[in-house]
Amino acid sequence: MMRASPFAYVVARSAAEAAKALADHGPGARLLAGGTDLVPNMKRRQQTPSVLISLKRAADLHTLDATPGKATKIGSGLTLAQLGGDPRFHVKALAALGRAAASVATPHIRNAGTIGGNLCLDTRCNYYDQNWEWRKAIDFCMKAPKGEAIVKQDGGVCWVVPGGDRCYAVSSADGVPALIALNAQVTLVSAKATRTIPLAEMYADDGMDYLTKRPDELLSSIELPALDGWISTYWKLRRRGGFDFPVVGVAAAARLGKGGVVEEARVVLGAVASRPILCDSSMLIGKPLTDDAIAAFAHKASQFAKPLDNTDFALGWRKKAAKVYLEGALKELRGDDPKTLGVFARRATSTALPVLG
Image (cartoon, rainbow, N blue to C red; front, side, top):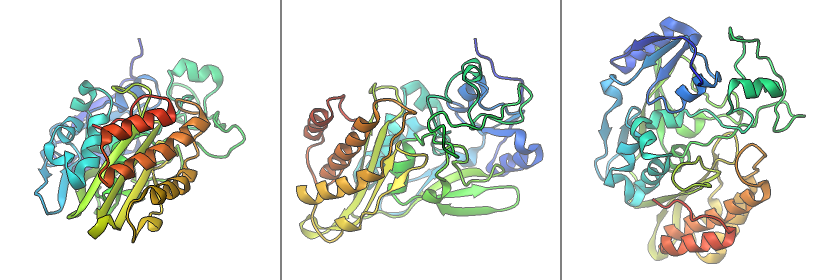
């Protein structure tokens, strides 16, 4: 049985109290919300914090203001089940977020996991997400924690790209592309200051240093602008429809004018790189979502999907699937029946239906 290394446990009753605890305990402290990612990582010795700061009783992280027609503010401590089960997050502009939250893992995990934890999810890799003994047997990769008391883990190689000089672990959080497509901002709290940044700016193209959020900062809330006239969706590809991480995620949001002409659009690819990819949607603006316009955009946008041998399915097939899922998501935005589109995606990729809520 895998067991976590010893740690102290601190309960914070507010975001400010949690931020102070982070400052007091230093680099060895970690925030614990649902723990659905952190606890397994601790058991595999991928992370060995000396102090866990629980956010369960931080009441100001569990608030929600989702008044129709106004900006939406989501506390980072809300569970994925709360968001995925809220009908307000399954219609029009906010549908991408509701579908993404409802597609994460299993009901047990969604009942525990939080939206803040999902946005800070560790990057994933077949060579990294193994137990300590397995990783030691092949020699630790560069993503292994360094300076821990267990062993000097100073591997300098990425087993995905052995000749490379960086880590290629994949960003696999479903909530991230959905919220970036909705132009979300996040508020980060430390003991010294509070700042608000676009969510897209919180991610770096590096499997190791994947967050620009500082270690002493707490993600306290997510803010969405008023999205009048917008519609959105999220498509997710995974091997098992009721459990797995995505191998391709497509979040698409658009504001359509008269005649279905695209006035604004945001399309984001997830699970194909170390950070989510906000695609250039300018070629969609000013015209309706015809088959030709969608096909041309999907062909161009899918070029940014450069999957490697560090997650499920074959590389070339996953790139093909990204194009198919981009087309499907945009066709749903123009009003095509998602069930029909699911059959289309299945035939085009010869795999399971996409996750459509």
